[in-house]
Length: 461
Image 1 (tube, rainbow, N blue to C red):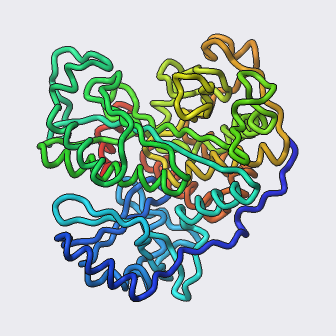
Image 2 (cartoon, rainbow, N blue to C red; image 1 turned 135 degrees about the horizontal axis):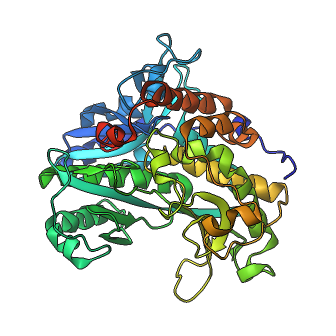
């Protein structure tokens, strides 16, 4: 693919500062609804959800000036370590600013909203993941494309002690497991609806103790926000029922993995680019270029989509995790699964990216995917040949690359990826390299069967 002239790093972005009257009204409304605490969250480069909280009367400060935090928040690691870099150390300050337009009131006196990162002068910081996705979304839309994204997340429930349930016989996708946890799952659905998430489905998955939910499509920033809010809701309700919810890529040795698949679609002037054209299944030339750009970029961005010390255990042939850099219609072993426009697909044709797992920052995984697809469009990339079989069976014959599952080559590919640097910015690429490099240095020699228990709840709320 020839180099595209896209420079997302330089695009101006800003989180609007609400006026005093709007903030006062919001604070009063929170108090009227019994809110006692407002939590603002960010997701860092290790995929950890970090937060600060205030009472409703401090909402104005949180949204306007922001609350202070060390730059090292960006490189806190899954084991409590700090992966210092030349730019992220003990000197400096960030301001965490709450987006009150995304504020949601939950049950039990808690309100939640995402935050973005600024310096003390009020300038956005290039290390900020949500702001980076905002830039990518804007760049896509500035070309005249409309973009929607939707997320599917898998998680495993455990007892309060973090250990697996000793359930005799788990029926994959069965009703029995749902009945076992009926009260918990019903509360998840009810509170998700009350929070405006409107889960599209919630069901038992293949692995023992595993469930999956699907979120409706939305613009990318709002879609990524929804994944954070959904994890918060699941985590709160699990505790209420004496359970824990693990969003680890690989919660139990000898078990299966949790995915965090991302779907996306593009349209132009109301017309979809993944249907209505002359290509396979109606894919237009622009849609084919988006798929081509994404497939080519995948090896270099895999450390963004799932680059933790546990991600490689999931990203294996036979796990339906998309371990091969290829695409195919309804091919669940291909990294890019194409969903054709049919009567059974109410949202129309779209693309599912399967290698993503819950250890990824959802803002950065979304940004990397959409940025790579946009670069493909701008470069007029060719649509690769479709893989219509299990890619594990034909990879050698057709030269299909298996995505790096070992952490060291995944990091090497990320650091050498020009697309990753252009789309995410060198600051974020360096920070991801630092936290994942820390995991490799400190845990790379640990017996694989010991890692899942150690980090079972690192990515949970």
